[in-house]
Image (cartoon, rainbow, N blue to C red):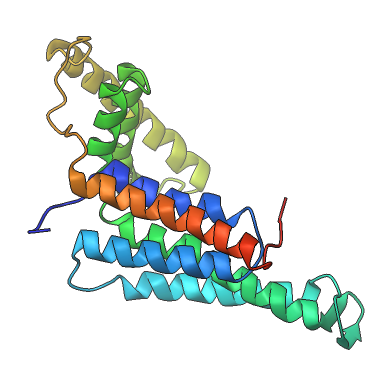
Length: 243
């Protein structure tokens, strides 16, 4: 794609579609087909030099833990191999555990891949220009996202300052002081934003850009993989409704 950066909204769609697809069934084949297709499409579109293997490892570990829980406490089905209190190991334990493992990976890996690629400013600008949310709400959300690291730094500085002054560093005291600092900063920022015309209804969002052909292709691949997986699962008789 010649270094083209996918649209943030397209990346969100490509991550949400697998999640919405796998909730319909608890079989193994649907999350495998959907997850594999979406991950390949995302890696091709993003053109990363390397995947975030550390974060993917955390997702895999979480999937193992959740599938182990499903393995031990699944509803008995077929041959029962062991039984102890609430724990029952049967044929159903294996199928439910594998399905849970595949479902978590199908949802978690695409979300992890796009986590560092989504631009909040571009995402919010797209929702405002297309009149999905009001402009004031979008600005408030954007400012809150931008100020989150600043507030965290304020909290750390407040802790150091109160410790140096011999004052209490309990969480409640730190939160009150940090909250006062944040409110004062918010008042100053609101005044500056008003002077610069941020409240104008025809304000131009420079970060906005429409969907390109590559973005539509990414969304189409994610949607088609979800529909195809459900159709194949139903036709082959592997459908196991979760609803």
